[in-house]
Length: 183
Image (cartoon, rainbow, N blue to C red; front, side, top):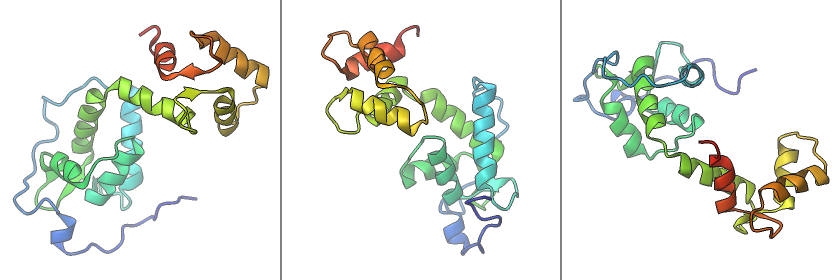
């Protein structure tokens, strides 16, 4: 059972469908200049997101579908940013983006993503009480949410192993050191 409708609703007037305006022209999305450094898993994830939001399966998505697909892939952009990205890959005057154009945009976004920013965002998912540290309580909550059946002793051992200043909690600096070790 899908949470998403099987068919797109009736299309609104062209001015709404193509917020880029009629001057937006299709560019060859099969451009040889498109970056190619994605892993197979990343490419598959992008393809699945595109197909999920291409609800009428016509091989193209509009602005609204693109924004939601990008959010599903971890990019929450402002309307103006999405429209700007679309300008280079829209199909004709329809305002629609085909898979190759979406792939090109997502490849560029993934390659320009700052891993340090992503790690800091992950830290704050653990630190839900905004103390600036990951406590045993935080770690218990995350383990429970992930369905991990770890005892308090195991979780405390994790903290103890990476708690460099031995204050009983993992600071953001310690978390970053753990996550970047070996890179």
